[in-house]
Image (cartoon, rainbow, N blue to C red; front, side):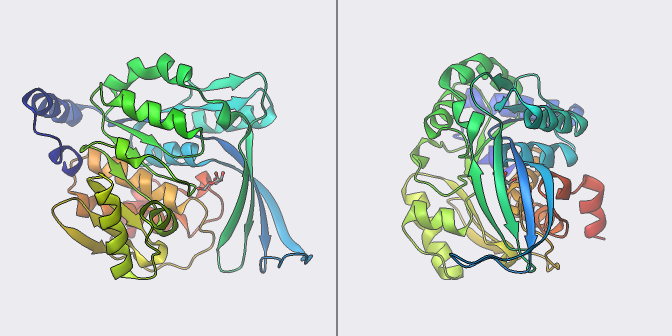
Length: 330
Ligand code: RIB
């Protein structure tokens, strides 16, 4: 697939890739997600309050969330065999998040239960347009350590792909990316939420999936339209990232892989809640790439997964199954 085709071409690596392809014909794709788990505390409101203003909310619900866990569930619902790695607290939210992951067929054997910090939470407001604003309190997520990565790194060679985000300590993300290069799996880094990160660590097998704000921050180019998105992609590539996919919500996604830059529009849907759309996209992209789709085709699939996710409320509960994505395309 495209992810592997942009490999360095070294002989041993090429052979390994060929072997992986043969294995993949008989196995479900294996993905490890290294990242966050949060309990999302979600308020629906007609509109977001202005600073200093009180508004009445329309309803409150709790949903399993966290970018890492969302991406894990997203990939599992699309058919991948997913292992989650991260930290929750020893509390009721942690228990509920793990139970939910297990119900969604995600392997939680490597999730640590932190003695000292509570499970991460996210306060999320969603307005009538489906737009959201989020304040996350990281808790146990930020207690992930390099030692934790050392404990699970032997699993990397069994994976087809690693997915990471930036809701755990950035130095741990960097460490995991560096270590991964000694094993075979390519990395998808979803650099969310927006913060500076040493994206130079990604190698030629890896893919960066920022949204327009994250791409703007990392490239120094403010994205307003397609041409500024292209400039931002170029800026990210100038920092050494070979393959970049910039997600632009209802406007689709821009991909640049060093050979070509192209735009893949999104299908139009009525947004109910945009929470986890980026997570749905990254999960869709990961599964499609492992299944040997070209990057453009994989972005098309990922756009559909993201579009379906915004039609339902909540994070993980909104992520579509493989069947739902296929029906969306009929
Ligand atoms: O990407 C959406 C996620 O971001 C939410 O589920 C919330 O937990 C925050 O981490």
